[in-house]
Image 1 (cartoon, one colour):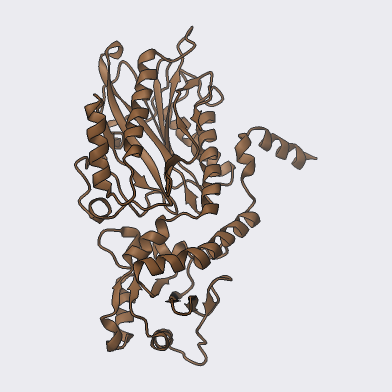
Image 2: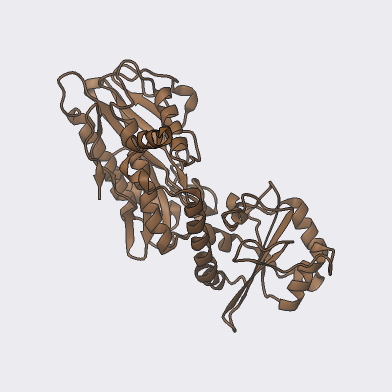
Length: 448
């Protein structure tokens, strides 16, 4: 009876969408089904497009390549010993071999191709597999510009090259284009799930920015941060970064950018009249969210936020529109950044754009559209030359500065929402904030 009462208490205080959160056994099933679909239907296409017919991913336990981590089955939390995955694409036969030079099958998708009793040397067995298939290009995960595609460590690289026959050595190439496309590309089913992830994220923020959590004059920003962190844990989820909550108000000065942590006081008491901001994301079913939203703390007698704040939010939405309208297939991140900033500035706005890929990692691999300290463009391949590809997700992260005469200062309207770029163009994964959340009264803020 006591257990039933505790369960009823738990479900009474979680947001409606949180009841979609699956138990661990069901999460495992979904993760493995999605992974099988990615291996069987996505990977062959990516290997054909990048011209890499053999992809070898090598990792040792607790020092996993970031790409390999996304390929492990749900019951493998880490690699085992040295795990070597070999993918071979034969276009003539339209086949994809998925092999593991390891003592075990790697889940149901990747079959073990090493019998240690027959061939004790793992490297020699790998070379036998390569010799038998005679690939044109052997992709390894090393990259100067994409950290997630640079997971092959020095020891394993040297071991591989030392054992690789000379006739194959000039066929070794960086698997960067394949690794980045694998990381950044979302499948149809993943996007169905992504909508649920962002909905859960929005619900947690809405609860955090409400009278259930914030009592003006008492509650601090740090307390709200830890409430959000605890909420994620209580729901059986994870977060890929610690939440941040900060305020802007009439009597404090505009410090550096949001990420200038040294200039932002901790444990600020939230007061009536504050503009409250959060940066928050969750991890669920191997996908990540990243969201920044704003709330206003009503003063006695107020029923809505001041006009200048409501207009400020509209200005932030305008910057979002200038950015997303310029997200065109094939454009580089720097090209998109330049066009979006020019358009926003021409309309009288003071924008700053720092949008990053989002997906299997929070700061993921793909097209980078500015950084908060690089508004002239990103001086690496992800900004300079890597094109915007369809079926990818981004944290539409930016701000615009507005002057508030009533507060005798400038403030920043900082926003971030998950957006999907597909063959038909851009859409928000689960809407965006177009109205300020109100404390104590909460209004609907999602633009569907």
